[in-house]
Picture 1 (cartoon, helix red, strand yellow):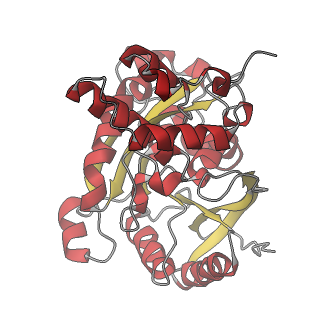
Picture 2 (cartoon, one colour; picture 1 turned 180 degrees about the vertical axis):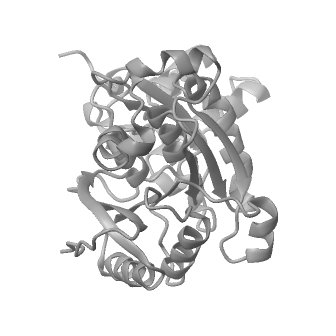
Length: 350
């Protein structure tokens, strides 16, 4: 077993050079978690974090008088970033995480680079939630199980469409509600080979557009296309201006409910924008984090039934998130497929 990073931390009393300090602080970086099976990056478990934290605090509190002003600013900034990384996701600086979807017999391996700005209580859409990644990895299975009539074009069947510069499934348009950082909508476009409109609030849209631009080549190479627009669920007049009277064959919403009024708003948006055809479907994924989340989902179920929407299929996914503390056992997420005039299935909630 090799030496841990803490075995080679510089001693500040010896006035280490800028290069030595810079390298040591870079080596203490905690790589953003994406829960990839083959993920790489520094493992904080290999280090004595008490020693690391003591070292980082000593750096930020030291005047570093033997360095230039520019060097001192750089070292202090790096040390502050390392401290932030160890204070939980809400304190973490801006990051870009690459989320991988494993190759299958019909789909090549996919990777999506998603930028997440520093999040605040008012901007939870700047975090890629565990639900998004869990659902993205299940999209191929869900598509073939529940939506094959709309996303049935598998990877090996997409050649002619790609050669003609078309979507693999040009007759299927998808609307995503509350896209956040965009992982689910981007993955939907690539995995299903469809046109996806990602939407969110005005304060989220710039980062969402950035991620759409960064991943558009990957999406188009797999027969899909992506764009984004502002959609405020509470402002029907503005929604009419941005979306117009468009309807979509599929509506997707992942982890869209974290306030009491959201079940009604999500149900309204689905009923408004889901095309009124038997084959149309809404895919909704809700994590069952606590009693409040489960209650909101039950309210959502009732409101969907009131709008003549019925449950077509459902399933569960267990996933990890980095919102809580290390050692969490995971969260159970229920995904459900809703449509017009389909047999009712009683939701199975614990």
